[in-house]
Length: 181
Image (cartoon, rainbow, N blue to C red):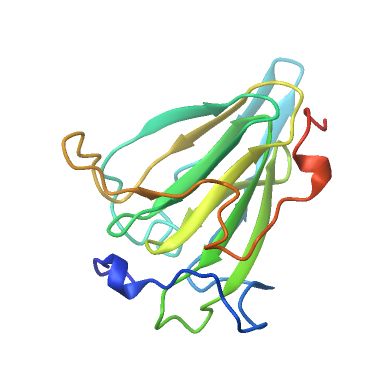
């Protein structure tokens, strides 16, 4: 679903259908574990290789963002761009909700943990709501190489509070306190 969407293409709750909010895999979300080379000097890992499945749209912009310990960022959705996160350091859970009305995975919730030495990259299609929780006891660092440039005057981003009733997901109580790791 690479085309631009509008908020009319998305559906938010509250939902009365019990199949909405079910765990599963969301169409278009890709998660990658990167090969790391570690020695006594540190580590090296590739985060861009030009593979067609993960990098199916050009890199148009790049930025680094951090999440402090115990902080929840989200919910957010982009109507035009894909996000492509790469974890540099820390441990982050990204929770995704597919609200695209015409998606085969409409209503699915997917949790992805990004961690050093494990899954490090995630591609988030446009129209998929996402939030990020720092699971580490220190600041987590990520880079994002989205498919469209950021427009400061007119950002491609809609947001909701992390505890909204419009998305059928509740963070576990143990994630709502102080850092876990």
